[in-house]
Image (cartoon, rainbow, N blue to C red; front, side, top):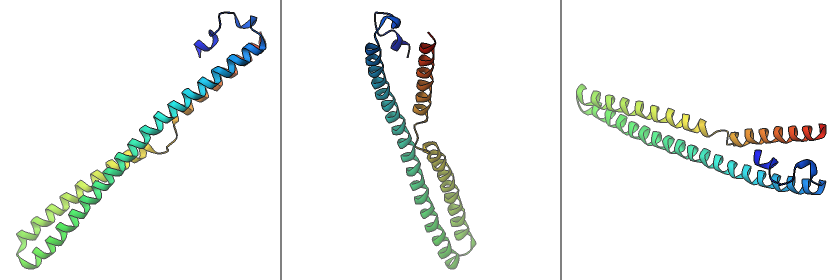
Amino acid sequence: MADVVRDSARPVAEQSTAELVQRATEQLSRLVRDELALARIELAEKGRQAGIGAGLFGGAGVLALCGLGVLAAAAVLALALVLPGWAAALVVAGALFLVAGMVALTGRRRMRRAVPPVPMATADSLRADVRTVASAVRDRGQA
C-alpha cells in the first residue's frame, strides 16, 4: 500500500478530486486483481492437499482389502493344517491392518489441512487492506 500513496508526482493535497477518484479506482482494481490471484494460488494448494489425502485413503482401502484376503487364507489354512500355518497368516493380516490404519490416519490428517477450502491468507490480506484504506480515509478527513 506504500506505493499507492506515492503514485503521483504532485502531493495528494494538490490533486483534484477527479484525479484522486481515478487513482483510487485504478488502485482498487489492481488490489482486487492481486487478491484474486492470491486466492487462486491458495485454493490450488488446498486442492493438492485434498488430492494427496484422497490418494492415501485409497491406499489404505487397498491394504485393508489385502488384509481381508490374508484373513480368508488364514481361515483356509486353519481348516487344512495345524497351528503354524494359520498363525503365520494371522500375523501377516494383523500387520497389514496396522499399516492400513497408519495410512488412513495420515490421509485424514492431510484432508484436514485442505478443509475448509477458504483462502485464509487472502481473507487476512483483505482485512488488512480494508483497515489501511479506512485509516487513510479517516486521516484524509481530519487533514
